[in-house]
Length: 389
Ligand SMILES: Cc1cc2nc3c(=O)[nH]c(=O)nc-3n(C[C@H](O)[C@H](O)[C@H](O)COP(=O)(O)OP(=O)(O)OC[C@H]3O[C@@H](n4cnc5c(N)ncnc54)[C@H](O)[C@@H]3O)c2cc1C
Figure 1: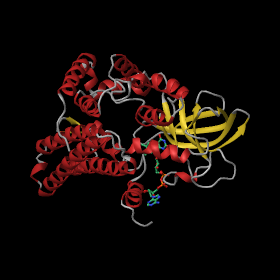
Figure 2: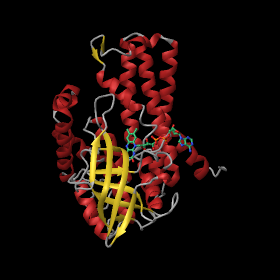
Figure 3: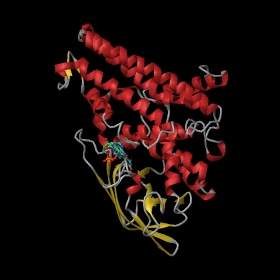
Figure 4: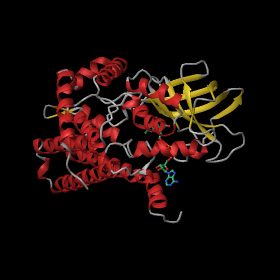
């Protein structure tokens, strides 16, 4: 395992830091600023900022230059993730497209798909959604029933997706659709790239208890999709989905570590401020989470070394997902322990707790999306360790 970056990589860090310093207004660091904008405006500001960042050359860091990427090393990508967190930069509004779809298209897309999808994605011209989950198919993805019936050069799609992140902002959705009539389970599914701005598609927001509507439902009622808009072979959508999920689950460990470690330091500071660090149970929990975090850092460096040596993560990505999501959740459970009986208050000792509560609530979701922890354990047991079902 290599724990160092090259001189060229460190030079890239300096360049990126300088750009971020010059292009993140100071007020963006204050939660009140984003609250004052509201959901729509805050989405637009982040979308535009990300486009400017791409135009300055800070997007698609490790993607080949032929696709509009920077052609950098995996080490540069890790530095990018780290510096984005350090600078408190806005989160991407197009994670599903940039992190999962783009690498899949680069690996198995047609030339036309590479040309049409990757450049516009980098500049945020097209916001992508992921249409996997359905009311009757979550962990059991092979149970999907959205169907596509061949009609000349099109598939005509009907059915429903749910928990669709960015549903109300989406321009296109990569969706698992049963395109072989009468097919069962993993067979006969295709991954279709569906235009959401057409009469047969209706995206409706789902309101969460936090008040936000990060995800929604998408209804298809005779939506038309040209057969050329299939990613991977027709009927081989399962294979395409497994490739895509390996990118979803194995995503950036270094950036996650940097973010979680910063949150940990802030939580430890709150514990001190409230005098809760003297409670032996809280101290023990803080120590345990710190140990988990450092294991996460080492695992992230291990994965980075593997990727630099050209190894494909494949099903091992499930182990990465399991580790970061459970560490993150443990971290925010400790925060609730630190607050103790004050956990329901909006503010304590002059400290505005609302952004912290939002993080704590968000942490509950990370062991569900991208495949639940139970599912990651099943995959690890069966596919990585070769244990019997
Ligand atoms: C914030 C958020 C964003 C999301 N965004 C998207 C999105 O953009 N696109 C999309 O398609 N989906 C999205 N999802 C949906 C997510 O992928 C599903 O919620 C997830 O796959 C679980 O499916 P389910 O909710 O139907 O739960 P179920 O599959 O009904 O699972 C319920 C419980 O049973 C357990 N379980 C199920 N099967 C097994 C098994 N074989 N062995 C052991 N335990 C099992 C699960 O672990 C879970 O604890 C999102 C979810 C969240 C929370």
